[in-house]
Length: 512
Image (cartoon, rainbow, N blue to C red; front, side, top):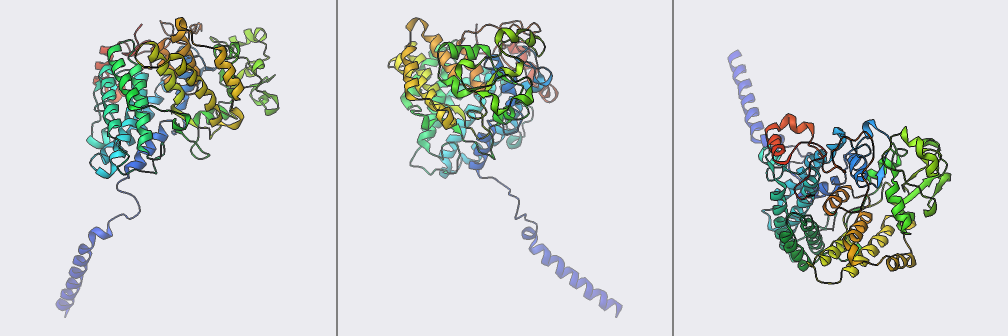
């Protein structure tokens, strides 16, 4: 009887085992967590992250990019140090590298790979290639030689120590990628309406791609004018952004925030100020944009006293913070500047251009028209340089209304400014690129890049006594310490090719 019982139990267990085995895959399949992602969602993530949704990368703009071009500055040191003192702050200098590789390119490169073999995702594939080119331009413009051909492939190809490519090679491939990807966009092919930059519209992506090609080509004006002219011509022939409605815009919300606005409206509210060179330029030229972008808490003696009742937007009352001071030495120049404390200087307006839901711009009609004006001056573009110049100014002034109705500029003020500031041939490059400086306000990476490329606006070097640079201005960001730890041999090869890993190192296209 015992043997019979054991036999029956064994038979039941065997039947149960095979029964489970038959449905093993079904039982062990996770029906909740995704095993793959739609490439349009990956591209969207790459677009969102480009404006620093990690919550900290916008601090590199505040510590370095805005200060180098002398638009926004802080007198405070420690974790806020950077361009204000012309000193190295390794934490802040690494943010764009970390965010662009870990977030933007990780998702964008994955979107490219996942869509390239699917004919129904052809337009998405080419859009992702254009966005990848945009992200890599920001990286290489900021740091110089970077991992490009092997970059952002840790998940896809398990390349965890990628080789660095020369910036010259990178730019040639970026121009080629933009040419191929933009030509590949086809309105007759399926589109992805859930894509957040242009709603999947291939014609708008095409204009963005050619406008980005124009920007990339103009980077080469010092080092390869022949290639620059060739691609400027291709960009113009392809068709460029033609209105503010076609700007490459990140439309922020109360959920997806403008993180520069978050920082300047919260924990950094009392720390950052518009600079004297920027404010004085706008005031001296009676530029109506000053009223759109600046506020001053008149009579504020500390951070808590920067209250709404003290705010003025009157252009005549705006006072920019002079360059070259820390939070101690600034006290010696308060009286001569007509302020009672450092907290009394003008700031960027957190109620218009820097609300937490204010839009941010990757590339604009205004910038494109101003680059065309320079191209016309160089003889690379057909048309009247003065007309492009005026269109660029007008576009940027009209763009103010996109931030907030309170920032809009009346037509009479726009017309008056344009009439009073005609393009003068002998000063054309300076005028055009100074307007580009204004038109790129809050676009930190582009401000830094075009300032080095063009040499304008004409700014006096930051006179801070504790400067760590040997030249007049910071020329690039050093590589993060993390690269020394995880990718040392490839990093050292890049440094040996370019020069020391410091703030003085010039990128390839930035020649004296």
